[in-house]
Image (cartoon, rainbow over the protein chains, first blue to last red):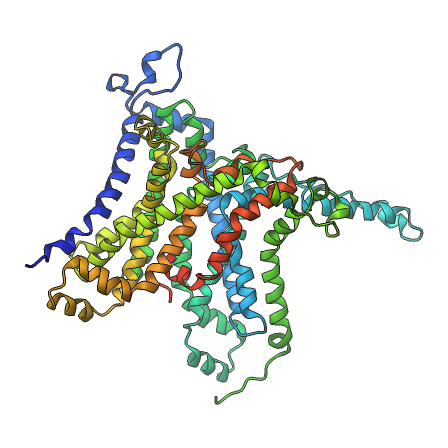
Length: 312
Length: 277
């Protein structure tokens, strides 16, 4: 008995599951984005259940576009993602080139370097914002406090006191404040994802053409031009992949933003959706559709850029 | 070798030194968390006990009392294990079909699967809450297992597909000649041959499930709450509980970090879909 049809059928459970997972909630989001729908309303109780009679057309979209947080959330989302991408790629290339040659303890250094990548985002955020970045009790606060103490001591010292009495008192930075909380998120995510970039670039560097390099050395090429004209072009593809994967993950950053400042001054699109969803489902859904559109624009360019290389 | 470039002083001493400094810097926050976990809550915020202190195990011994750690840990283990298993059960047949009986649409289907990963989770937050609450699934292990499987399925299928593609088709076809059924082929030929790749996929999916922090936080309250939810719920200890919070954090990430050390190579292949080797 031939069962040649069976193999194709084996794809269907996965495809069906993903299709349902994608279409049903997204369809509902689309529907809710066109109606008036709130969770609590004493004045208009009819809006508290989804119904076509509450049709609002593009009203929710208009409302969202006009809300003061929306444009900022998009700007902030892109700011956070782009900053992380630039930092991780630059640091990743530098570190990968640095540790690519054999040296004593290379294996241990690799293990030390990769560890942050496996720390769960919630722990990452709690650890950084409290134990490290806290302006009073964290390492930052303690370090700045002790520098100030030292300077205080030097002020009273004979001979150098005149110099240090005009020295400024250092102020610790509060990373839970309005704009700085975005920096805190960028720092912690960069710490977590640079190892990922390093790992991928290192894997790629191991397949670099060594003969070409030797020829370049013979021709008297400087280390810089070797890096610029051989290594960097070789890394083009892994860089594109690192950018794509990180863009996917970081456009939906949530836990870090929630933990650092509960979104104060630092909302991104997912966070704004979460806030609307506390009551105004129509607005949350319209924002969700905007987020889908933004993700699709990014995905379109990125997949174009590297889709072909993935398929080879 | 024709040329022996004289090793410069930098490559002999400078490079290893800088490399070690960078490695230690990146590891430092984890080291600091573990160090703080052995301090009492009072010592943890005293500058004079920054490095010199009397180590104590009380934070670890009191994890149940302080945070109910084991209940959350149990939920993390249950959901991650079953989600990984379910992902493989659905993913292996799919990747098998794509690798050995591809159709014209296979590439598009693969790309489409990847694109579902780009759908921002927040966009479907409310419908998911609404659906799961009305189906009575909110805050159940079943729901979290299902959601974790679905979000990891695309990456798992991609990974398995890249591993399966490397198996010579002849071997599978020889099995077909001998009249082995499709299921038999998967069980007796494919799985033993691709065991390494399947294990790597399982490991990676497990790590992702363990660390997931959007749905596990938003779709649970108590019964199915995982370690992500536990840590997220204690986000601002205001310096009062640095010791005990470090201990519970270290216990939450420790197993996964160690597991991660063993699958660095597979991680690269898996996350880049085999495009970087």
